[in-house]
Length: 254
Ligand code: SF4
Image (cartoon, rainbow, N blue to C red; front, top):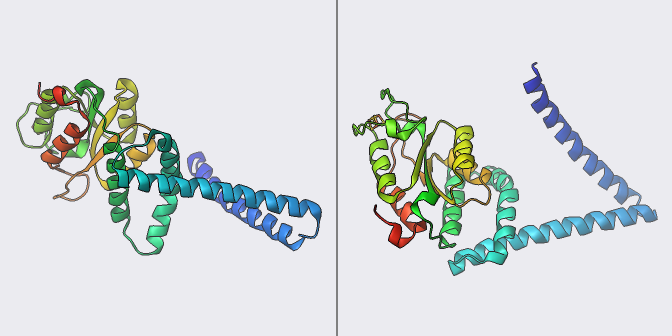
């Protein structure tokens, strides 16, 4: 087994041991609860668990309040975001346990995220917005290297890239095509957009939204008439609506 695999397998085993140790310590403390130190430790663990629970519960309530009011509340943003980030893997796990498909859960996550971004009523300049596209939107037979520079697209119209490039020019937005999460992150780090309209599948979008943390990302799901990751398409009206929802009104149309 090489080092890369050993690290992951080691971490899996360490996680299991950690869970086992926590359960063993709690069991020991409960079994010896007549000893003062056990009582103190049990109370401390209970207090910490209660505080964590209350913070997460308050985070969920904050998300619901923002959705109901359809307006961001700056003082609740951090806590709602942290609760969202921390509970995301747990929500996926719970959803799988009750038989909800992963794609449906991720679609719901993306919809909630988009709503939270809309509730901020961002009004950005065109050049502060990045349209981030997946490489699979490009026609598989196209010889032009658009991940280096979208302007290499010759606009033949065989795929949606031509129209999306025109849209970016029209709104003066940055447009990038990424082959994966690493390149997408590099584009974001290099250009520092204040808002992103990202097109991808459920998995990549939710991962991207999750990883980019505080950066407002509106996710638009791609269409996969030829199966995943191959000659995909996107509803251009949806991309334009996402763009218009975070751009200053007087910035529209170059
Ligand atoms: S529209 Fe652009 S990217 Fe798509 S196939 Fe034509 S030249 Fe290639």
